[in-house]
Image 1 (cartoon, rainbow, N blue to C red):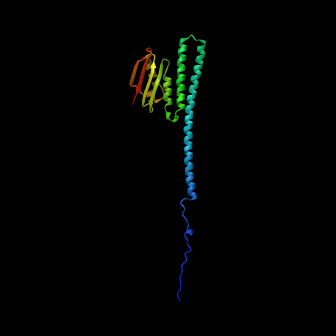
Image 2 (image 1 turned 135 degrees about the horizontal axis):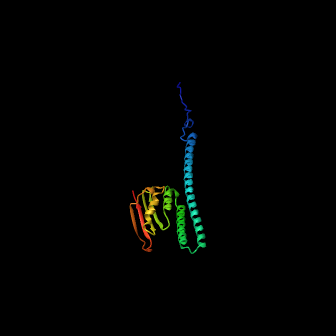
Image 3 (image 1 turned 30 degrees about the vertical axis):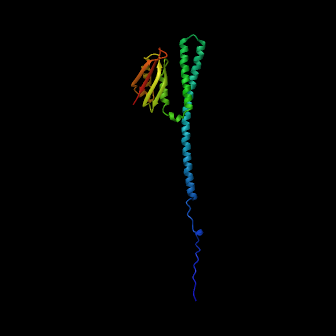
Length: 201
């Protein structure tokens, strides 16, 4: 009599253990890393926004101060309208307020982060200017590695005084030596002198 051996495999593929690439612990780890990156980006964005808001507050305060000075000057002029020196001073103040407003509008429409480091330069330029000398164009490259200042003065002798005031400032402009000067009479107003100061590396 012939015996029949038959083997039955009960270890079916669906019964074998599965090794999943995506596990709960790995999912939690990935989500934790993503959450950490999002939190870090939020902190950096908040810090940058805070810096920008502080700069904007400084500009607004300067604008308010100039506006208040102009209003006081206008009140004095109304009381003494015949004083020509006072009228000229008022015109100068109004010009400075207008320049401050233009700067304020420019900074509102510009990414303030691009202006990091330039506020001190502008403060020094503002402190160095005086009645009879007007700045029309300013170019500052890097940390005042190259500087170009173009403006108008009533007298050529005002330029050394202006440069001397700049050297007493707090920014890197105070250490720059202006090695090029171009000065000529204004074609439209012969009583004024146009000038260009340049400092390079």
